[in-house]
Length: 466
RNA sequence: GGCGACGUAGCCAAGUUGGUAAGGCAAGGGUCUGCAAAACCCCGAUCAUGGGUUCGAGUCCCAUCGUCGCCUCCA
Image (cartoon, rainbow, N blue to C red):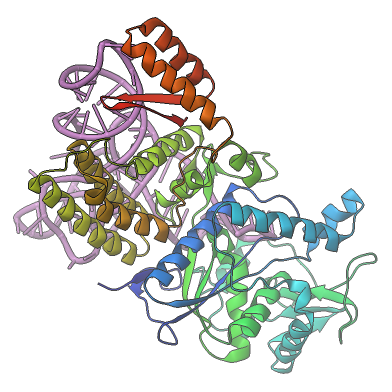
């Protein structure tokens, strides 16, 4: 079974074949850094982290580039509003975003280029587009000439004629066609600006990604990713520019994640229905966010609300239950139980790969993992020893690792309180043996109030943080 | 208005080439337990609606209703 990937460009799933055997060039549009990142950014980053991890698991060497847009209208506006330097503002949020990604256990991209580090190359690219007549200068701005591109609209399924008829585009007399877009913007007073053959200015939004792709990955790449809100105009324009320049098909596979839905609608700053990554991680383990993303198709809208968060918190607990050790004094499981465990282990491995091979069907893959959880827990309940559980648990750890799950139990590491809790639990055990249940229950209840859950077994009591 | 996606049990959600519906959460019953907790076992849907193609459709076609995204900056 081989990997199949859904391509927005062709609107179907096709077999995944790279330009160069064994190597994947992947570019994912990163954020414009003018504010704290929200859970929607987290979703996108997680989706492509999962893609990358799986490709790596399949044996590919993945060159993963994610940019930071660190100069644009919004950054300038926010910086002016706060009375700070735009570059400093961008720097601050780049740092914060990097930390968010690390906290979410997202692998750092191979490279994180920034628009402001690519100015020379952008200018060179604009120049070449002008030379080939694909662009024109107007009052210090440079526009891309969409009519020059016979394929314009192929990614988003739009036709120029129809878009013009749409008429929600504001008219700009300097443009030859209303759909022409700026690849270089002349600077207004007080704005960050760089010298160019067309006067002081800064790059347009779309051109930076084209330039970075060209510079860091080459004229053709394997995967280009981003949120589906970027399909038009951003990615459409990227294709137009890059292909106008190279004359070759740009990205082999265009992958787009669906939007995270907060209370039924996409998050937006204007609606004020934002949940930042920082907010989320204050309340929940990173694995919960990842599990939410994993549990549905990456291309579909993702339902995100308290109920979903709660459900996935429990689901994480269930996954973690598979890693619990054997029962104390486990006597060993029967042949039949072990056979069953072994069968499930193989079924899970196969099912996991089949699912992920089908356009990264992580929800299906998770289903397979839960089947293995049940089998492991069953075996444990049937007295399997640690040694008997180990093979299945190892595979389980390997596969959850492929999905980027950290699988750390929620306990806050070893704390200095541990010894005291051990003592209390031990004393409570004495109380139980002397049938002083009232006091024993009181101890359990008081500890529960402090977040310590006690579990009694025939062989004794254990405890864990809630 | 144009383009696109989606509508599966209380909630989330999977379901390549059509052959009678994964998994998670919640609810309920049971085993275990002094009582709990944890774990284990049992239990639920004919797939928005209406037509059509077919021996047979959640899975293809048409229509209707509904939700969402994009068309302007947005992961």
